Length: 140
Image (cartoon, rainbow, N blue to C red; front, side, top):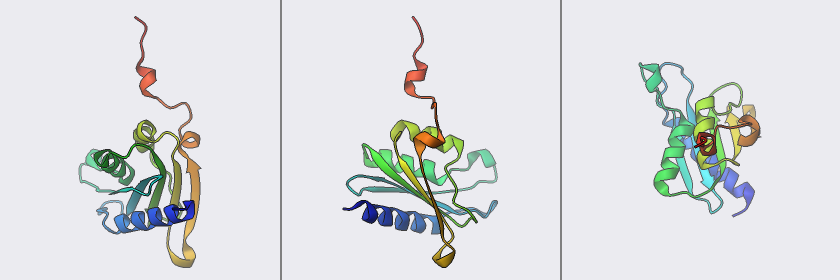
């Protein structure tokens, strides 16, 4: 599978997840698809809750699904929203992603058709100096 094919599959999966999002409070629907080099895809969508702290982000959901699938090394994260501009993962999702996919490339798509906008980032650029498992090492 070519990189372009992987990206197209990931964006389509994220768009499908985006349609299933539950966002009655913000109105911002988000779908995410995390992919490995072999084309395996784990998806998630945002699920809001009246107790805002209980809300689950799409990216976080995709990470959990990737763990369930045993996805060893995700290389691509596609995010699709109904927002006006492409959105990167929030800070919490960046922290969750860095343990499973520290070098992941992120493609974020907003809108659709002729109005579609897209941006790309690497997680390492969005989360420099990440707090990693090695940060827990303490002197004895």
